[in-house]
Length: 214
Image (cartoon, rainbow, N blue to C red):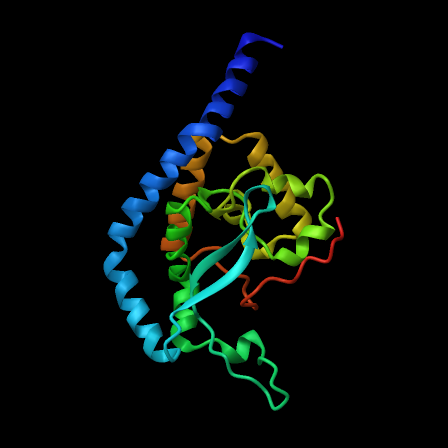
């Protein structure tokens, strides 16, 4: 292989190991400043509507599978049926919560996860802990980088594509990670959010669970 290939690999390693973390912190810091008024307004509104619970915390696997608490705005209430079980997502999501989720405002608190080094601006989305034991060796590679607020799979279909395709996109991103690719994903994400294109699956609030099949 030629000098160009090795130079490309070195650049990828340098970006992944050093530059990307700095880039993440700077973007998160700027994002928190820009969205501060919206952050405060939504927090107060959800504090009132959700009886003092504006945020949603859930354990997710991060870099190398290390567990952390992801932070999102709480878009569903805690209503339960007669047996004490939570109602379906469709029944629990509020009107305000539906708007917040469809406009991706619920993702804003994750900038705090990025700022504290638990997540990246761009990377594979952090999935549920219960999936960890059923990943195959290729799928496990999604934890070779920090999880992201947005990623290659998100700008190529998000909830509307099969799990196998999501993992394919995640691994492709890891193999081709670069500053230019991150900027491309970030710009596509902004465009999709502004035009509300490909944000959620058309008939679901959450995607189907992964069952371990390829």
